Length: 360
Image (cartoon, rainbow, N blue to C red; front, side):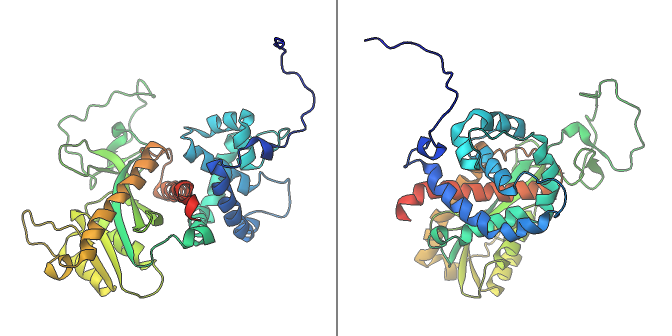
């Protein structure tokens, strides 16, 4: 017998959201780890808020929602709230019931400074790395490092001389007429009026220089998980300087290896790593000069292994840019960009657990 095409109009629902999500859904593994990490950060959250006034949106729910934004490439907090309003999977992951209302998108802007000052993203990443299911998958001895450009939230027209006098209001505030052809624009003399901390930079010949930051990650080689990320201003030495600073974070003083591309093959950088009890497994750059890496390093089989493993860093950058919305940042200032970059790195680690789940 043919069924009737009746409209949905039931007043009550007796099905729990937990029953709506399949038992094998990959977000279940991720949600378990996230909840454990957020529980360890409860004391940090308690110190962020006052004991008077109206209750705020729980920071745990805000962070779970931001994770969904990275997982599903949701371009803005406003679109995120629209999804959270009708998407049952999102409601389950964040911790909202069917009858709970969603909050205004401006809540993220109001709480971002509070989360930034408490360095929540770095603490969240550290909690993910130290989680029991994740810690056993990390290498303690072999790492790789690399850097990538992150386009700043500023247009090239905002790159003006630092000592230029105040200008009259433009004819079109949204897209003013600017003629900078023939002008020698350098970071030493020019600065963006939109994001002064960004720098005009291009990483390779033949590419267009853009206002950018540089994001760096330190990856462990066993499963390609991010151990330490950071964001710096874009300079020619930023990658090497950041690799040294990130390597200092590694606990203990045991001998380790650090892989990298040809950009890290300089005498000063190699000597600095060796003084830190780190064997530099960087690619040899002997095109126009003598490489700082000689046969003492390249003769070992571990060097060839590091040369293969280090390329997995590109998988991290590829995911963070195409899925995690880090190709062009939506925030201004290095501290804010660093916060989002670190949180996106934590999201990448959680996504990797989806594939590593059978092993845990």
